[in-house]
Image 1 (cartoon, rainbow, N blue to C red):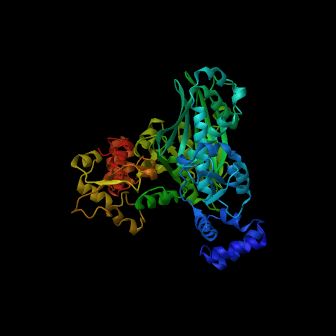
Image 2 (image 1 turned 90 degrees about the vertical axis):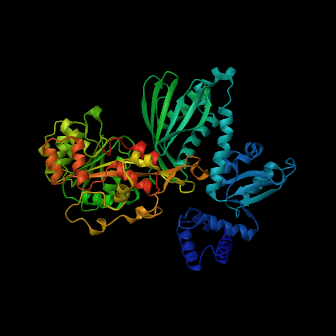
Image 3 (image 1 turned 180 degrees about the vertical axis):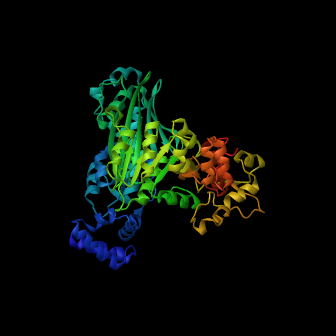
Length: 601
């Protein structure tokens, strides 16, 4: 784009109100410094709405603007004529005939993300031999449409159940580099990242290959392919992960790094042999979407203040408990990020290191060579750290060294697999740790679960019955108390604002004299018909105060410790779940599924 074109584009955007003159001047200087055109800089600048810029250009040029390309309606004849590499490179996609009644002679409507670049449109006009009608759309919308329409084309190829070709389909050498298989696998990653999936499961069935995504903790079938393509699909994944494609009898683990729509995605790959063929599970770790801010995880105000209190202590052990997939690692990473300052030395031992945190020394344990959590902890103590994070306390040796570290002036974070906060105490005792060591080192336990958020666009209100309250384990009066008390045991120096009521709990529900309103999922286009979007943490936080210490020294069981802490103000998991149900954040069914039936007993 020449200087005249740059000037014209800048004046156009100012005239149309997409930019102000001062911002334009700054952008032009930045574009010159980076050796970019103004249009390229605007595309990459996340602070500026690309849609508003493109709409201004489209209005100036008298072109239509398309906000939602209907990819299901795009004729396959248009897609097959254009190579996917060309469409992606120039962000163009033919998507409709201007005259659907006479497609053989009709001009072709083409989506373009850069209407100021006519060259690819001229190429398409030469390719089709007929006029091109440009229609403006954002890069994201076009890229999404490209992936979906070419994915549809590849699924048609891979879904053909041609039994007579089954033997040919097993030939790995012939099929590994076939474009449809490569594109089909690539689209698995693209669609998974777009839909926010945490895992991709590729599973062999009797007659087909089934692909399921785990979204917000639940598995959903998203696509299938003919069983004859199983080996080709698995081989493609293995090649990308650097695994041995000839080894089908043993499990293998690998890693793939993908850049999808500018985001860096780390993919952990695991393969296992099954009776019907190899099965692959890929875990997606989006480094840019990872929440490392405690305030964004969903904890209530008092719980958040309590966690801040625990992680700011100079020494002691803080445990985060819960089953696999309950968000323990995310909470620990967020806690480390909160206290990560240049004056603290922080070391972590993990299995594996899921995300790299700047300024923190992270070590991946390798039991095969003797580098266990216990041996890593011993090494850490010679490195003069202030804070230590151990991925998990699994045995007496690790627990003993962690306690020793806390007693010698270190703050130790770790996880345990227990159902409730008090269960971590009995778990440590079962490992052989003496109660007096627990009381002198353990300062707090956070037990948490993840529940799905109701989709804000389609959730439906309803009046709960007495049975609903019984299932939650709270009556109407107790629910009002839950929403209007901090939900944690008081500690010395507790900020006065957290002793006040969490009045936001009553929003949308009126006061205690009115009917409570709960919500349930319905499903809409925004949530893909599921009724839920995203997840939120619910928790119970056990502070080891004098009353709890007495119970531990008396070797009380988990139920007794929970009752003592609850009598002192602790909100149990089920009660915290009742809070988010009453606030309209999640459904009753989600809380019941995530918490134990005995949480309120």
